[in-house]
Length: 70
Image (cartoon, rainbow, N blue to C red; front, side, top):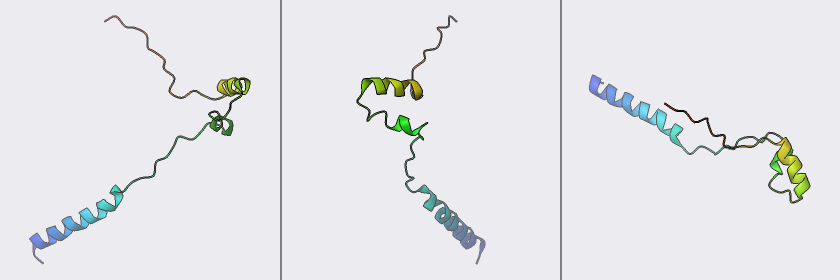
């Protein structure tokens, strides 16, 4: 094998080695803080729902930052 054939074989080997890693990855969900919080969407009783809302952390709560005067 000359240098050109060797470099071509090496390039093909590198491409083949990296292509299998580009497949679809399974989506992973964020773990729930507690099993009771997983049932939050299913609870219909307002009193029980309010109790769970107090115990479960809120995700995506908006907290505006202070206004700055530059």
